[in-house]
Figure 1 (tube, protein in one colour):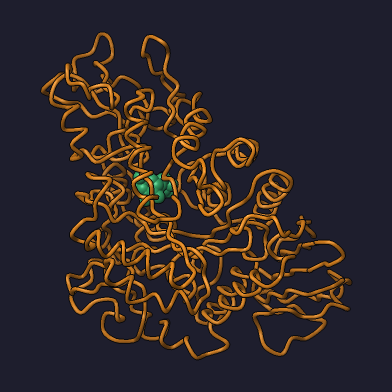
Figure 2 (figure 1 turned 180 degrees about the horizontal axis):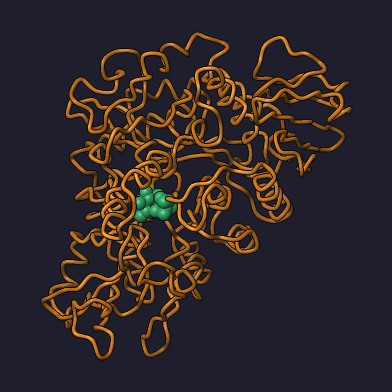
Length: 567
Ligand code: ISL
């Protein structure tokens, strides 16, 4: 335990700056706002702040479309404020992770402008330009160089009239993919990363980093994917998820950027579709790639094929998935742990029960379940307050490019608008993006102006101010969970063993280190269960942390969670 890296006992907190705190009244959160709210983070006890993008950007995807990697968008503030943030965090013993978005740039990045200007531009090869499919005229349906479907609906190719060629965009058409085959691209990215580290930032959360290597033939050919039923498009993921050179690129980045600075830094690769076998390779310290990855298995269990076809989560599927990740990274590598982020609906609404009766209890139960796993937990802003999904009235209430594009595509395909809206209410990323609820005032203390996305009307009851002094609040429970990880090496490093893998409602496991054993038992339902019958070993346990008052030794109440010392 003494030589375990610092982040094994750390907890990270994600700030989505646009929705965190506005300091200048324009309705959009900013760095000045983050600086004002650092006491909240210090009070929670988190060790790391991951800041979603604040770089200059046309904001087609809320900053995940970057037009200058080495600046701050005036919308969010100044480089000087970023330096102030680094200093203020370091002064409080916290670290700053910047978001690194280098699978693609904005279409307004000067690199892309130059690339687009002419097929003979020296930067032409920095992006993926391809002629129309043989036998098709550019711009015609089906003329795209491959059949791949974009993450944000429609084809991954945009036709450029000027040159008669297409460029690749796995995400929005305003997010052209960089060509990592080109060494000039890679060196430019590494230089930019070194520049941020030299400024004092402590690491990076790397956006869709497992997509940077594409499977391309020596002659430049990219391959069609299997057709997606009901569409004219195909699934290209085999060509870009964990592509042939991904490990080579990450190892090169490590050598060029992190070598000599490793100990103090933290790197986490966001990797949709990553398997546990691949994650072992990505996070094996001996290989020099990244410290941990964000995997997506558990956030894919409650929908079929597409996130827009949600189905209820089955607890045994969650156990099987988390259990495999815990086992797979037990000896080599490391897990990250999360329920939600700026791309996911609110956890209490999705996996818990946000009805008034169980909202607090299910929020604290889910928190306990996650934070007692082995790995580094990430708290998403507002999660520590029990923030819930937003009651969207109609399609005009949505702002997110993914949701807006999806609605448009679904209408063209003749889907039922009411059904499409129902799925969007449950799954839209905008659920996570409403302003943080600081107090009960009109705009929840988020802004003096008009918020860019409305504040959830439930803020009058659910807000930080109301919870701060209340020991039974969701906030206080998060504080205790974070402190427990800091204090107790079993929480940080203990071996994990799943119990009751087939049980529909009770999620239980042990953590063991040396002779010490913790038993964690969480009732993820509104049905009470006889604890002694399910887990006799609980009887002699000493309660370290629970989420409900006055525990009854024999009964595990709805959404009750207990952490017991049983050694
Ligand atoms: O949001 C998703 C679930 O529907 C994913 O498809 C998401 O787009 C994917 O997890 C990648 O996310 C990251 O890259 C995107 C950006 O829109 C997300 O906000 C970011 O977290 C493109 O940069």
